[in-house]
Amino acid sequence: MSERTLEEMRAAYEALESRISAACVQSNRSRESVKLIWVSKFHPIESVRIAEKLGATDFGENRVQEAVEKFTERDPKIHCHVIGPVQSNKLKKAALVADCIHSIASVEAVEKLEKVCAEAGKTLDILFQVNAGEEETKSGLEIHEAESFLLNLENHAPCPHLRYRGLMTIGKNTGVAEDSRECFAFLRSLQQKMLARGGIFEHFDELSMGMTGDLEVAIEEGATMIRVGTALFGERDYGQKA
Image (cartoon, rainbow, N blue to C red; front, side, top):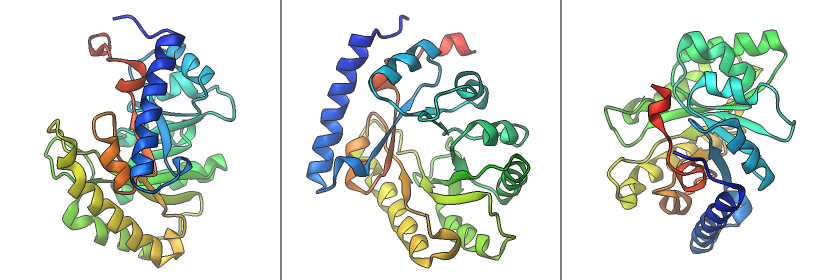
């Protein structure tokens, strides 16, 4: 499977931008209120370089090792987002390479990230993943426990090297974008509730939700970050990553 050329990716990017802009108009939102994260997982560094030429600044990787390989050395304007579940033994690597981790769902992970960032003298943005679609195959906090989990963080030891920035979820895998509206709306409601509390949630203004198939619904429901790979880079060759 061949990777897209500059012109092919430019055309794909322009088509995607039209979709994003139209969704923002529909929702009476500014285009600047939605950050596009280019999900480069399973695509080579050469494709990342092409995306950079098109103005991409934020890239998402599911696997920590791929993030390390592609983004350990990068231009300061390039931001790395680790968007997949991170095993405990890879949290240190994730913390050191990422500008933001979207998939935190345990106090243990919070504690380890704080320790690593304190030692490195780094401040890290984190999002808490919620399994808002209530699907067994998805990671994250369950809907019924998400709010109590977040509230409990207020009673936890301070984490001055972490910024709690918001929530992340993955829409329902039904092929019908509208099926994800309810879980996206739930996420926004919870995010707004926590932001209003202030304190450790004073920066809790991000909603990472929406991908190639359901980004319009996500934007309508308040997404501030959308994670798009296929529509930009093309289909992934999963066989090479077995």
